[in-house]
Image (tube, rainbow, N blue to C red; front, top):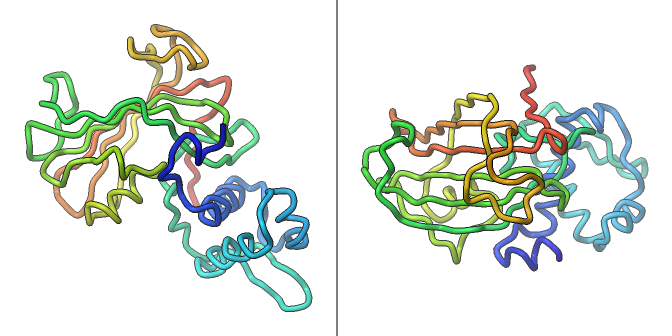
Length: 236
C-alpha cells in the first residue's frame, strides 16, 4: 500500500521528495559540496518523472540548500534555511533521515482529561491518534491534542504533516516546541499492526508546542520503537 492509498491528503510527491532530501542533508547523508546524481538517474531511482524531481530540487534551491550549476549538476549547499514541514520531527531511521508519513487511527473532539498536560485556553480539544512511518517502516504511535481555542481538526482535510495543516487550514504556525524524552509503556489502544504490543516499554516523548500565543496550544505523546528509530536533536 502506498502513502497516497493510506492517506488521500498526503503531501504532493514533489514536496515529499524535497522533504526526504532535506532530511538526508540534515542527517549528514548528503554533505555540503556533494554533487547529486544526474537528474534522470535520481528520477528513475525514486520512480518519478524528471519534471517532478526538478520541482523538488527547485524547492531545495529556494531554501538555499542546493546550487544548480548549468552544465555541471546539482550541489548540496546546506547554507540556507531548514524551513521544512518536518523541521521539528526528530525521529530518524538508524542510518539517518527517512520520509515521515502517517496513518490516522482516530480524530475526536473531547473534553481534555484531567491527567493531560496543562496547555491552551479551553477545556476541550481535538485528539488525533496516528501510526507514524519513516520510508513506509512503522516506527511510532502518536496522540496529539490541539486546544480548541485555535480551531478544530477536520479528519477529512488532515495531511501527513499536522504543522502544515495548522498553517493552511487553521491559519497559525508552530513556532517552537519543548520535548521531554524518556521511556514509557505502549498505550492500551496500540493497534495489532504495531511493532510491539500494548504495555511494552519503548522510547517516549512528551511535547508542548507554541504558536504566537504565550501559552502552548498543542500537547503530544509519542511512543517510538527504539529498534527502528532514534530521537535525534542536532545543534549547530
